[in-house]
Length: 187
Image (cartoon, rainbow, N blue to C red):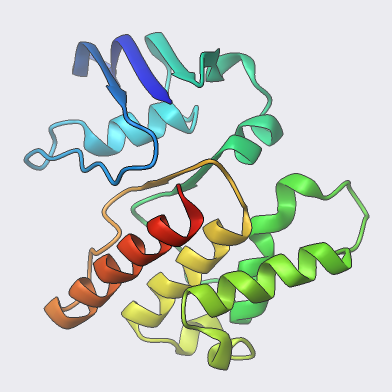
């Protein structure tokens, strides 16, 4: 589904990834492991087209560099490592996941609203939908962001360090929720 061919990327004077090639298997949870500075977040930045690279990144045979940001967002949901705490409610944040499907100036359809509501239920944050994101604990925020990418309704989800800043209890619960959702949504 997602493949990397001779990928080289890094920062001025400091290559981080050099000619790496591998593929990810559909319908599995795959972890990319490595020490700090080994290129895990660089890899995510390349997938998100935020960093220049050589080589190819393909999703289901399509070179993602040739897709518009909107087309990419309909295929891949990416949750980066460092996230802001926006001054919005949980429901508004989750609604951002529907952005790839909305035309400029258009309002949510009933189907969009239902996708947002279902994503909040799936991530166990329905009861918090009216709360401001800034008032949530770290684990609650992570679940809200998980709901946002579920509402995006893509074929694959990329998470960069999703359990950072979570205590062991929240980390275990978050990972259980990911496994449960993978099974339910077949992603």
